[in-house]
Amino acid sequence: MKRVLFLILMVCGILTGCGGNKETISGINFENANDNVKNFIENVENDDKGRETGIYIYNHSKNQRYLYLSQDFLDDGRGFGDIDIKTDENSINIYLNDISNSEGEADTYKLYKIKFKGDYEYLKVFKNGEETHFAGIGV
Figure 1 (cartoon, rainbow, N blue to C red):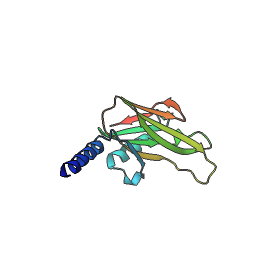
Figure 2: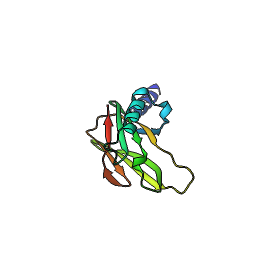
Figure 3: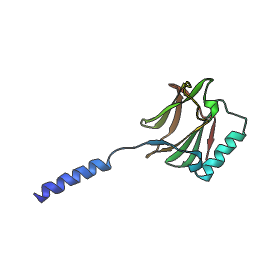
Figure 4: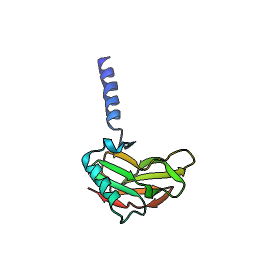
């Protein structure tokens, strides 16, 4: 009986440990970001070059990034929508959407913390289903 119980626990442990790569993305406030991220964002806001997409990424560590969306991300009359992250064999794909800004005041920016496990060769970003590019990358 002990062997069967041990075998069941061992199989459960192996399956739990092999959960694969997990990616998380969470919205954070500027005030809660570390000083390096704050400095990066302040530099972005003070630089008039390369702001066409309004999408910026800061490489905090091997498995953690910060995604910053400025007002330049939005078209007239639009607000920040949902965000999703998906991975495949060698890339992380970030999907961003904007929404109609029919409700009250809109956010002036969005800041996200992205955590992932594993090694990826590519980091791609999509706006409303179409692949686009980062306006700036910080390290």
